[in-house]
Structures are given as C-alpha cells and as structure tokens.
Image (cartoon, rainbow, N blue to C red; front, side):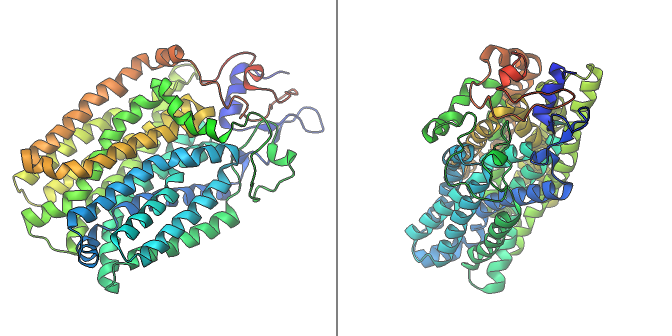
Length: 507
C-alpha cells in the first residue's frame, strides 16, 4: 500500500524508515537516520552544539572586565580597546558564509571539528598576544572559528529532531547564544580578580574548547542525511571525517554554495522575521556594552561586583526559553489540531505576541527608570523582561525559516544569523554617542519603537500574508535531493523530491 502525499511529507520532515522488513509488511527504522538515534545521543549532540553557540557569544563580551588592563598594557584608549568587540561581532556574522558551503559539501562533522580547532587556535593566540594588533588578529580567528555553529546549530537540530519538538530544541541552542554575552563579563571579572592576570580569560576558554573538540571528535557523528543513505553507500563510518565532497545526489560546488545564503534574500518569508529580530537582538548587545558604565555612573557600583548586574538578563533569558520553546510548539500543535491536522509555518507566529509586549515594556522600563535613577533593581527588572521577550521570540524566528525551507535550512539560518550579527556589529559604535545626545530614556524609547514598528511590518504581516508570499516567491531549486529515503507500507524507491512527492513541492 502506497503512502499518502502528506505521509511522505511527514517522512521527509520527521524521520524515515526502511521500506520493508523481511515479512513484507512491517516498516523498519533506518538506524542511520539521525532522527532514529537514541535519546542520549541526540541530546548529547544538542548539548554540544548549544555549548558551542554559547561560547561564541560568551567570547564576545568576556573582555569587557579587562578593558582597563588591556588599555594599560597595549597603550591604547579604552574606546579603541572596545573596537575589539565590533571586530569580533562582524566576523561572527560573516564567518558562517564561509563555513556553510563546506557543511553542505563535506558534511556537518568535518566543519564542527575544523571550526572548533580554529577557535582553539584563536583562544591560545589571545593568551599570548603582546600587542593590540596581535590581539585583534586573535579575536578575528576566534570569532571565525566560533561562527560556524551560528550557521549549523539550528540545521543540526533539524537533522536530528522532528518538527513537533523542533522549536523547543532549537530554543535550547538559541538560549545558550543569548546567555553567553551576559555570562562572559560575570565569569571573566572573577577570573581576572582571582588570577590577577587578564589573559587567563582566554586560557580558560582554550581549555573548554579543547575539551569540546575532543568530545566532537569522539561522540558527534555526521548528521547530514541524504536520500539513499550516502554514508552506507560510501562505506564510511558516521564517525569518520570526509576530506572530499560527497558525490551522491545534488552536491554544489563550493563557490555555488557560498552564495546560497545570499540567494535566500529572494524569499522574503525567510529573512523578514530575521530582520526584525536582528534589530531587537542588537539592543541587547548595546545594553551589554554600556550597562556597567551606566550603573557605575548612576549607582556608584564598582568592579567586579558591578558585573553581577548581568544576572538579571540571565534570569530573563532562562525563563524566556522555558516559556518560549514549549509554548511555541504547543501553539503550533494546538492550532494544527483545530485545522484538521494541517500545519503551516505561520502558525508559529501566534506564539510571539506575548514576547513583543515584553520586549517593548522591558526596554521602556529599563530606560525610563534608569534615567530617573530609581532603585537599581527596578531597571534590572525591566532589562530582564526585555531579555525574556527576546529569548521567547528567538525560538520562533529561528524555527520558522527551517519549517518553511527545510531542505535549504542551513542557508536560511546562515542568512538570519548574518543579519543578526551584522546589525549588532554597528550598535556598540553608536550607543554611547546616542545616549550622550538624547539621554538614556529616549535612547531606549527609540529602541522600543523601532522593535514595535518592525514587528508589525516584518512579522505580524506574515500571519496573514506569509503563505501567499511563499507561494509568490516560489521554492529554492537547490538541495532537492537532500531528503530521507522512501518509507512506509509499500516499497518506495529513493527519488528526487519532486518525483518522491508526485510532483508536489515541499515548502
């Protein structure tokens, strides 16, 4: 008996089976399909990828407590030392464009190993850097190595988890990328105080990256799964490392794959939510850059204890993920049941309404109460509310393009991540002059209004017009063969996706 069209779509999105067992009637799970791996293996991969994402964000701001010491050692002003933040964020945003083609031609595992090794080299270099130029080079290398996970983290989660729980799992990855910038200054401040040597912030990072590299090499197999089980066809272990491109199915040239994230700009449903989120996220980068300065100015807090104010956004991020991940999947599943089991990616946006309210209210509370010098916990509560809303929305924004363009998920997430980090790169250069010109209250009021306005234009409009917009823009024509083998009751031979679905496209 042949599977229905909807069942075949579900196989592509949520895992596969072998065509038949020997009795000719019972479907058999394909053990090589990452979605059929054990709970422990899948969640260990999720934990590793999430940790890497967190380290990428952590290493951005962990030099903040050492600004003064670095300024003295290198003979540069604190403002010039702060440029090391912008350089790092810029490379973190553009690096995925380099790593992404390798991930599509060689697989995820070689890229994770190579990029982590590059990051380890950057951390060791930072420990030994004796000049400002050398430190800038170390920051570039470190950011480039840690940027790979920003392109691959979300799609790796999509490789191993089905659609029903994908939002929750991607949420844990995005949670770590949100926690990193706030954990960095807290931990680094006490590392500097405890060791008396600021270079140990790089030394501790190098130790952690070394352990992560060993873990990836030993326990993280290839999760890229092709139609026809390419791993078995090539006789390769899931734990081997490919040094030349796959020859099975549709494998692009490196130069072609390099531009594919930019080609996703042709599909507004992919990048519109990401554009809104990029600006909303960038406010957190700006706040993290100047928050210790403002609290030292208004409340006379001193280092290292002033860095404890980052605990407030940490709490907001954790609570935002606990609420956002499960809530996103709950909303989609509930609406789908009411819709006769039919799912649309735009259903996920209904889960973002509480988040945008928290973003606006949190930014306003933080800016107004800080300007008026209310009790110091009040602006911190506002900051926590903002981060809560931002983290809750992160799950939706990063899951939506994967739901829309599963076969091009790596390209879509590389574009979204590039937008986020590129816009965030500029904020540290402008937030101080903006506060000096119009004050803290008006600065954060402006941020809140920009986020609210872009939300209605880029996100809320997709609730009504997203499906039509996707139909108008069409479906990307590449990676059509990167699907899971046919399965179910009846022998389904591996075919390109158009044939596999009887001519119906997956969007």
